[in-house]
Length: 258
Image (cartoon, rainbow, N blue to C red; front, side, top):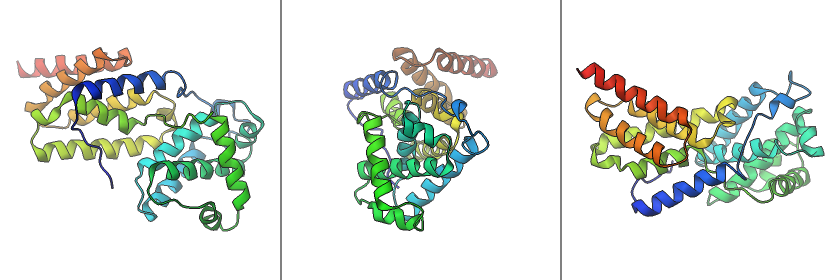
């Protein structure tokens, strides 16, 4: 599985994070769309979670990054916010909901992987449940429905961008740094399964996961890294609740040392 690098030029990393934060507040904004589902017994959080697991399994079998599945649901979740006849059908009919999930994964693989899985493969995987034409039409509907705004930052991208700015390598040894990166990967994968987290700002999810991972490190590293994380949270447009959580933990950590 690919791993994001935390090395880079600090000004460039800061500019990249600023752009990512700006975009997710505008064209990549996401909200609760299942609240409008006319069939909550069929199209609900559990149905979405099962499809996340299915997409993750496809990525595993094909040796793709699981981040590709996260990217796919970034597309799907945003598409299902936009009023249209197709969106209404997807929120009413489980088969249509699954079709647009397949179309979103199809797009995500094209954008993120070196090997392209054709629509015929997805049709075969569905055991003929969806024709090649249906998948390709659904792909176009998603692309045009999103006005080709496809590159929504994921929680993992946010976490890694923040970590690059923090320059945690100056604090952690190689083994601890790798553990921190692996833990962030693991927790962001789990976050994709949660509908409640999927409709939050990816920056909020990303910085929260990084915050929780840092708390699992040795106490001697926590205060420095939490201070660095708080500095990033205050410098950029993160939720105030994130800043408050980090500050509160730093105060508790300091009090415990006295």
